[in-house]
Image (tube, rainbow, N blue to C red; front, side, top):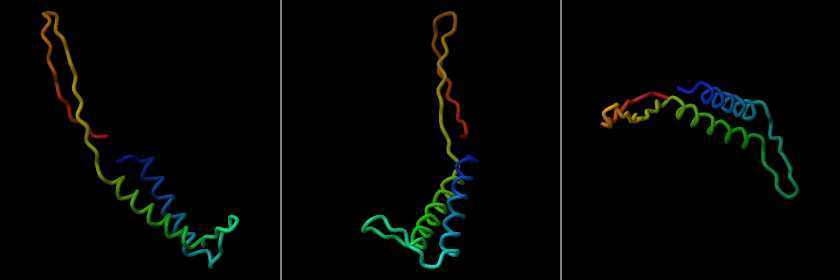
Length: 83
């Protein structure tokens, strides 16, 4: 599990929940465009939850090591590693 990734997901989730439950219908206006802070909070909550689930999925990679011995023979070794 990538700790930095899951920490960012948790922060996003918490910020979203704060905006959902701590704001009471405030809006952000950018010219003719306005968006509710509750809407932004729900978006951040969903994104944080998805990122948290993704960070819990273990990833595996396969690496190949090539080695040439003194006689000139080449050998390939595969190794699985967890990220």
